[in-house]
Image (tube, rainbow, N blue to C red):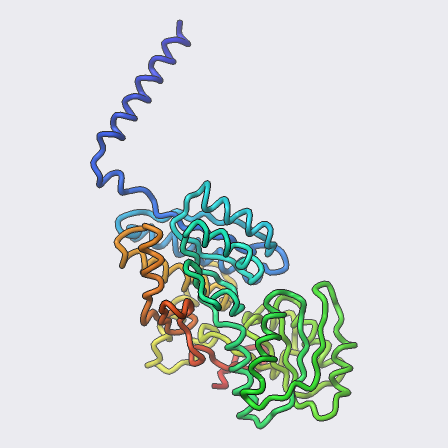
Amino acid sequence: MRSSGNFRIALRIAGAALSATLLAPASVVAQEPIRVGAFLAATGPASFLGDPEQKTLEMYVERLNAAGGVLGRKLQLFAYDSGGDAEKARTFTKRLIEQDKVDVIVGGSTTGETMAAVPLVEQAQVPFISLAGAVVIIEPVKKWVFKTPHTDRMACEKIFTDMNARKLSKLALISGAGGFDRSLRAQCLAVAPKFGIEIVADESYGAADTDMTAQLTKIKSVPGVQAVMNCGFGQGPAIVTRNYRQIGLTLPLYQSHGVASKEYVKLSGGAAEAVRLPAAALLVGHLLADNDPQKSVVVDYKRDYEERFKSDVSTFGGHAYDGLMIAIEAIKRAGSSDRAKVRDEIEKTKGYVGTGGVVNMSPTDHMGLDLTAFRMLEIRNGDWVLVQ
């Protein structure tokens, strides 16, 4: 009898709850959270990208909620660790769309993960702001896909502009095997003639390689080579940098924004001295002029991140900050978390000052950054110096 009585009580409670829900005013129903999805390489070989990205998203979702949320609604973050694996990224994207029913996705630490997710977000019509680098993410334009980092093509153009200023024209390439690495190499080969740069050597290494001495020795023997560029990210560039010095190469060495964190400097040790790379202003915020529109943004983000996590800031966490804030501003302008309305407002982003630069998107540009958003940095005494 007691069991039957409990069952009747449970039914009455459930019925009362259902009636309350049905009779609730629209203002109460509207308090559903705004669901933000993310899949990030928080662990694995690309964790130097995904870990600061996840920490950034968690910190700012928490801060926004503490300040009252967005449109009077709390944010709910659904973040999954893809480990940099494209198949996992595809699985988690499907989960974010079908089970978590997110309103927007901010994530995709690597190009491979991002491109695995693209067909799913396009089909489901979910706005997606990628945190990966390759230009293929936004060219050709995909209606529901955007990105915050500078592209690999821009990295080539910034490096070649610097080479022109240093009167260097003969370049050797050494490239990794990842999606970003291959795309960066292809973009550099494509735009080199525009800058009068001749590619005089073109070597490569595998993802599991732990010594690139053989490839670098070949480059060293090439007549007339004036500079070397490494197309890669992860531990590969640090190995290249150490081997570079070990075999006595003294030519200017360029890396890409794929290594724009202190982790690369630590892994490379003293061998990183004088290496140049294009990167976001975030790494040198304290060196920016007081009237630089980015200064307050990057200085504040750096302070907040380093105080919270007791670790060096990286441009990768900055990409996540920009992605989240661009999405939040779009939701505010839309006055809704409706996916189509949010997508339209992301595309209309103008004058957003972020860690990566001043963003001006359009129907033909789903990134919104130009070459002025890149700063050329040099590593000196284990720290970043602003070259231009």
